[in-house]
Amino acid sequence: MNADARGGPAPASSLSAARRARELTGSVGGPVADVLVVGLGATGAGAALDAAARGLDVVAVDAHDLAFGTSRFSSKLIHGGLRYLASGRLDVAHESAVERGVLMERTAPHLVHAQPFVLPLTPLVSRGQGALARAGFRAGDALRLAARTARATLPPPRRLSALETRHLAPALRRDGLRGGLLSWDGRLTDDARLVTALARTAAARGARILTRVRALELTSTGARVRDELTGEEGEIRARAVINASGVWAGGLVDGVRIRPSRGTHLVLRPESLGPPTAGLHIPIPGETNRFVLVLPQDDGRVYVGLTDEPVDGDIPDVPRPPETDIGFLLDVLCSVLHTPVHRADVVGAFAGLRPLLDTTAGDPGTAPRTADISRRHAVLTSSEGVVTVVGGKLTTYRRMAEDAVDAAVRVRGLGAGPSPTATLPLVGAAPPHVLAALPAPRRL
Image 1 (tube, one colour):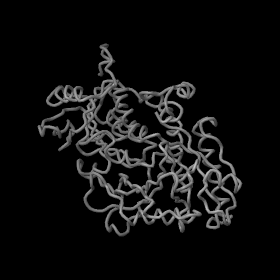
Image 2: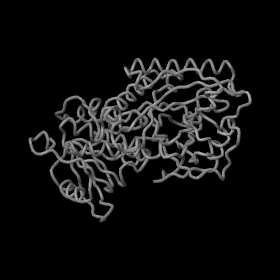
Image 3: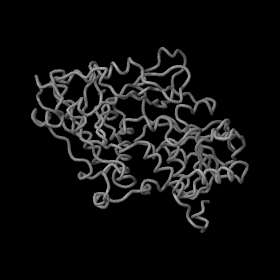
């Protein structure tokens, strides 16, 4: 049980070097915890919060810092699941829409806001394709309704005139532009900030958040760990172990096969694109349901992404975007622009690795493209009883965490009730009218 549940003073949410040292000393070789979580990206931090919110005693470790891996290299979008609806994955689409609403209206309205997107109707988009896209956006709005997300949170899609389209995206080529389709989705101010809020909220519930502590070996009763600051090794014992280490999950638990997919983004200065006041959906030639996204950021920069390419071999701590990815994104972007963006205009690039579950067997040459692998997450329990959660995406981290803790509670026989995290505000959350009145920049 955490300190709150035992009747003692509730711990603060602040994370510091002194707190880490104190809690690491108490965890290594100390009493048996209820749950040990390995990995402090969005899913791992979410699992630590979920378990702590149920009154369980939680230790969570990461070999690096909060959001070191995939969770800091995302598009910073909170998707409603439209892409999955178009491909017939109704369960994933509905789950995405529900979790988007949870973040925007209950748990993190200070970190997620509505983002407008324009799909320009250029000569590359036939009238049939435009009609299909418009039907898709209407279906996405139906998803919003089914998820019970308010219209005030996400406005309805609509058709734009050519003038309105150019106003929102000044860099678009005017020749043959028939107008555009306006839609809305959720966007994070910062993905690493979300993970930090999750970890701090978990810490306020009594979870011990231990960064720079590497799990060397997992068993059903804990882990052998190393303090990356001192090199000292020891053991953290726990009744249940959750492996939420993302693309590195297969290195800690036998039988878990991960097929990483690289998502690359470009970083442009705002003047390269107008600057745009809305994001863009740019159809990828030859694909029926894939787009390159143009994503304006609160600090003025613009992201352009993203690719979906398989990664073979060893998994790097920090993946590097290859020139082939950069060239592909520029080619698709320039297909709709009046003035091309050149390689010299790219001021930065970053890449993240999606931890997709490899369900293929036999010849890897027959495996589907990573772009076609389902984003539905999976919770796997090893023969020893270690629970691993993989797959999914940033939007659904909370549901992934809930399912992982549910499995750990069930498999290890822990005394805990259902997850309360769908209605548990993160540190800093407040109603929109309160946030709007704060004397601070919007992004803060």
